[in-house]
Length: 612
Image (cartoon, rainbow, N blue to C red; front, side, top):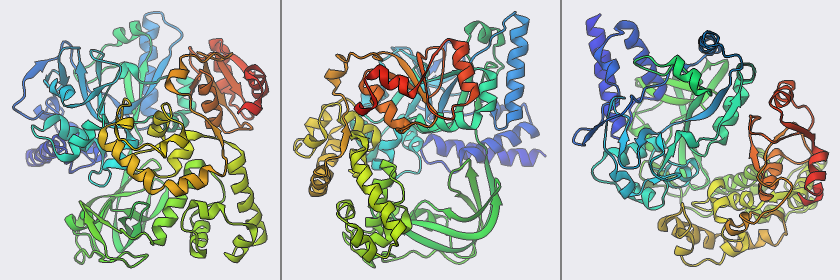
């Protein structure tokens, strides 16, 4: 037994060291599983009390109170046991109404900032002084001295700027925090003000009771994770009342008043039958493993992502290889490890779509051709998916591109006769033509339209931020990167990328804007302070099926100075109900004294639905 334990601890130590250096060799789920195994074999093993040792050579700082780990729940039964424990304690102190906060579990590097010293979590008792991180360019959101939080990178920024080089933003963040010297990419991220320290007390929270959480946990989980602009690793459920939290206290490992709910990733072993190479919007060639069908989490898996060409080479993945795959929640299955080798890895030399020669860009093979149908298809798909326009799925777009469309304006230039020539039938033609017309006539947020163009460095969040300073038409004519980098949250490199990418797309963007979309304009930063409306400063929840989409309603409310929320809480002022609102949500609103109004009453209050 001791040999097994020693081998397991050695593997954990190697994995932990690699993680701290920003090059993880195990997934979080596999690491957690190994920790659980060690606890079963030897619950008192010293490694369990010294997890996450920091890189040596930095000044150690003792925390005024331990930064404990978090208890985890993967099932409803484990959550119920947590609630039972809390309610038993509440009964002991005579408390009846118990509420919980739900926040995203940020997936970064934990730290503590007291305003003078910035310290990593370390082993929970002692961490390392990383105050210099702020001098390097880490941005303390909300200012210094706001306590415990997480060092993270915005997901949008990572996807547009760093996904070519890193599998997960945490890997880059860990390197920035722990390395004495910074790579070029680390310097770029810091220069772009895209490494943030988020205090936990600033996280947007839902306030719910036990029944709400248990009955709607999957909806709450999905909503909380999707609403976060940062990478997440589950949700955190915490007792709201500080008196009850203090009474519950903590073990030597975790707080007893808090638990993390995570969707556990199921794994399986299967065989690689073939590798298909897909071409992305930016030209990345991504390997997809065609595997022997295997069931995971109730789904039959036939295809698995292998990330990039570098992964295929490093792991020597070829036909016949036996691999362990993992599927967490609804995430596309991915490869965890190779457990048995087949034929040697083989990489394509030419683009599988346009046959142009591929070039390496870090771990990715890239197609740089401007006449690649696959890139065109992905770019057009990005437009329709970002705007949420129906009927334009992959097969439809493939036919349209084969007909001759080279960009999104070409699609909007098509008439019913063109769709017929492209091979569509009468019903299909009517639906496609109608969707295009209505996408122009229906209200759409300007930031969503801007993000749909696929401009480098401009995801949805940064598009909204940029449009707080410029009108969408004006962005086409920006020529100085300083015009953008002067805005909080943007750096000079990002500014240059946006200007260069916008300039390349200028003709298409101008043509599309000339179609006269019904834009919901983002209020400029200086104007937001002057907004006066019946809902200015009010917290509003939109629920149920409405005439407009929920995002459109939320965006319009924001333009009127309101604060849209994702769930009803004690600070909610209005619950605006469309069709099919859940009984539990309405009963909770009544219990908390929230005013419940219909969609029509809301429109009457703000001046009619024509303004949306």
